[in-house]
Image (cartoon, rainbow, N blue to C red):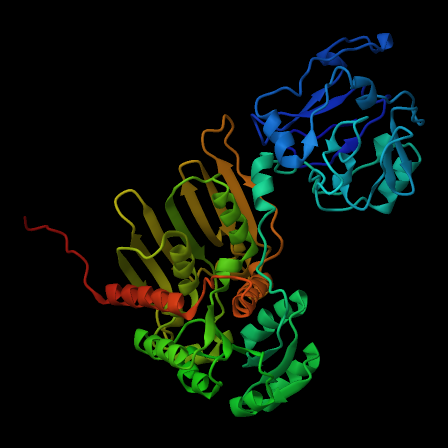
Length: 540
């Protein structure tokens, strides 16, 4: 059986044979999710293994164990009646009947067992009722046992019967293990995707296009058929590297080439939107890079343009579709967080603003071009606040730029705390840098890290964590996420737009009408920043 998970459950998982441990049964104790592996060895029943008739207690009938089997599509077996099939290592290098067999990269139990490929460690538990657990039907997903395959050496060790030497690749099945209900909820997180993909023409060949949309579309299989930039050589160079067949030096040229079902992805500085959008045909489908103009007045013009020309249009608020945010959203939808009463966003890092030359003269910077993602994300969770309090200030190390440090409080009533705090000039190495969003609810809490903000543009991997309120052992547990904000979230914004345009989705979360409300929130924050605070009443 499986044993020898180290104390903090972050180490290797070994498969032991009889010389190492006698009659070993692994069980999951979901009362303490982090410490979720217990080893029932000879010390738990009879010390003398020579008797061979050990009968351990029915340890699987523990608190919440039924929930474990419910969410993993595995049915419980009677550990007493089935003990002979679970514990059956009788020899140093030879596996007898009722034991595991390794054949052609398959794991078998007994002669009549259903084989499972060793390409994924999850198959270690997906066996028939002669073993630990059995999938209820052939289409049921196996229990998640980690996401890295066995190496050839591990497989060969198993095939040779050298069970002590066989180790699963890290992460092990029980790295940061948490309750299976939460795992099942997170596994429902999916990026929106249309039934029929449409061709895309990208307007703009700047840094953001290189870093996120083009890699995302290639990964998603969204065809980019043309690239336009007023510097045609710049467009040609990027198109050549990405296999894009056509380039253009003007919007008019791109529009003439575009098929009727094309998506126009506009990734230009916000000040250019009011000039570019009128050139698209009526009824066009358009994805705009955020922000939706540089001011609320420009946002109003853009909204009216979209209305009057009948655009199906959205703004690229990609953080909504970041895989880690989708994971937390799935937890919340499953009821694991409860009512949210606290959201905090903190970013303290070094941002190389010089990569965006147009920002050198931008009158508004941090809130409009960066933290707007955070405020839009908060709106997606909480709706519009009643009011705001904010201060955004310059940094002496970038005195030529507009404000790059912000503190903002969003008022959602007396029982909720929501704030954003950013500092983009914390240039003292990575040790104290951070960038995260944290939610607290009546039933649990979650936190995501935004790795792209750390060592931009290379970034670090995004993460997501979850903690259950009221647990006997308070631990944060890592959530499995399928990618990073850059580039994967950009698959979501484009997928959502295309799904809405074809009618397979009834809503468009980042619709230009909703994006206008985010712009109104941004405007309120800037106005608040210009107002004086309350002086200290020292003369009273």
